[in-house]
Length: 77
Image (cartoon, rainbow, N blue to C red; front, top):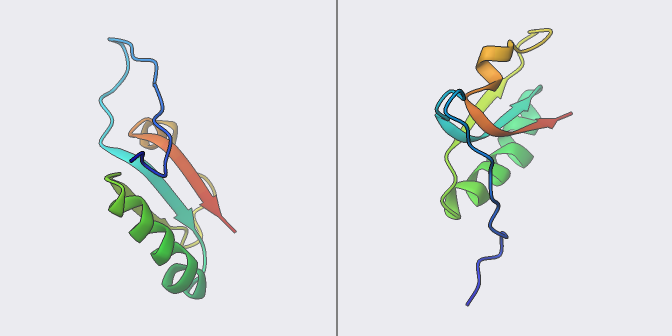
């Protein structure tokens, strides 16, 4: 039986920072966080991905060093 999520190969380099999480989920709004984002987080965690939820809270942009900690960033509007 195969996994519902296809495997991905990521390029690695000795100059890259080590990844702390697989997926960053950035969202804004309490309703979105309680409903869609919580389901998305559950599904990603169920297939073995480490997720980090970032609630916008008025932050205009994310810093480059923060984004280096994740393989994938998902922005939910």
